[in-house]
Length: 266
Image (cartoon, rainbow, N blue to C red):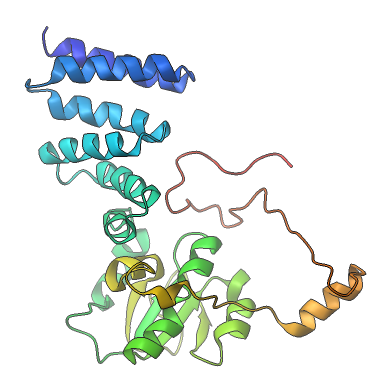
């Protein structure tokens, strides 16, 4: 009975959070942790209440609860992914992306294991960075291709989703090959080397906090396309177009760390 009460309180707290009763949820979570302290359910209660702290952006408390829960369940992926989000929101980028490596990865499991690029073993082999996840992830992490070639002298190729192929070929094609990704193959047709999931690059090579050059702009639009749209939109000299992206995910894939849908009605 002593152990059951804090678990029940934690469940109630989760339900209150789901109903939008944030103050009540926080009070119930605090009470659950107080009652669970020094009992056998301490880690379980931390696991149950951590999402409440994360939803309310109490990031230090969320991190503490998740680390306590991981002491008892160090192989539980959902805890590592919640910790990844918590760390990234606190701008602890490297550790956050390393925790994000616990994400389910069907591509890596089904296609890439036998040819996975490992820094300590394959420095001299060609590296194919294969896009995985959303188009936004690919745009963000594609900066690693030219940076790795310039900074480390690696033989790098990018394998990206078809909707981004033309843009990235125009922006990066002078620096490195950009090829269409094939969801049924770990390597594009005619490519050789070993593969690495593109969103894994920050965990493997570091982030812009360790390497400020990674923060430099790396994308550019085709000047001919820019001129064409200026004429079609009748934009005057010096006038700029503001674009709103209110609904994304054209590939219907999960985002990097999105706990709540970001798509909204226009």
